Length: 339
Image 1 (tube, rainbow, N blue to C red):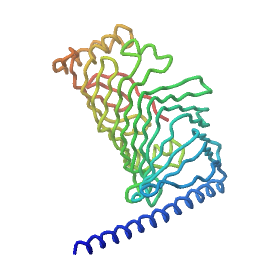
Image 2 (image 1 turned 135 degrees about the vertical axis):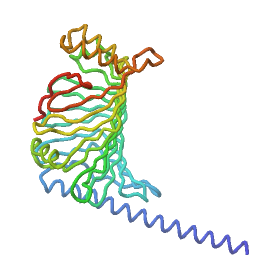
Image 3 (image 1 turned 120 degrees about the vertical axis):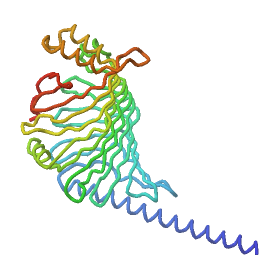
Image 4 (image 1 turned 180 degrees about the vertical axis):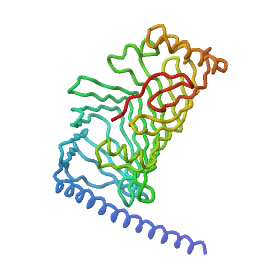
């Protein structure tokens, strides 16, 4: 009896292994055909897709490939030149999610200029659905983005981003959730005032929320913004967190655009260290002398004690209405149209 059971298990393992191997080789064929077909389609549209079709490896559980020094360009001229190697792979049981790793040197030619991105690590994933890419994740460490034409650069110790779904809900409106986390961001050159008032480096910035409404992706920016606004578009911010010097902010709220394309909405923040910042700004002459006394009085009235480091704790509503940015009932300044 035991001998028959052992034989049966052995047969089942052989069959399972054969099925797995067959499925892997079938998947490898699909991936190879997909890469070659995508490359041909890209070129047929007038773009550039320069790379040698790579072999597909990773047996038995992954379908993985490596692109050597790839270059992609749109017909309009925007170009990306990748690092010496870009690794991409998917689990055998999850074809539709492609993971990638592309650390090193990237070059981009865009309307904004010739950009160079260098990252110690760069990885992420793209989840595909019936309508194309549906979700994107990206993570970088020790990343520097430089604009060769403007001799300017930005650096971050770490950046993480997730966005999706990237397809409209019910075939009409979008509801794109996003979550971004930035750590160790030195202020760009020319921002000595920010460094003087707070610190030369923003320690942490976290933004999470959902962009809702119709998106006219092919329209020019002003027309797209008008359609989004008129269609009930709203930017919901579920988490806003900032740690910069002795200032800490946490908040949430929602924003849209008014008829003049100015920000409109309300956010509620919990702050630590804001009173001290306002005092420094007043001493530096950065606040209208007619506004400063009312602003300080309002903040002190909203204060609710101190944290363990001695910073004043203030909960404050910030509103954008009729082109005016206000803290509670105290107007802080005018808002300019975005377009």
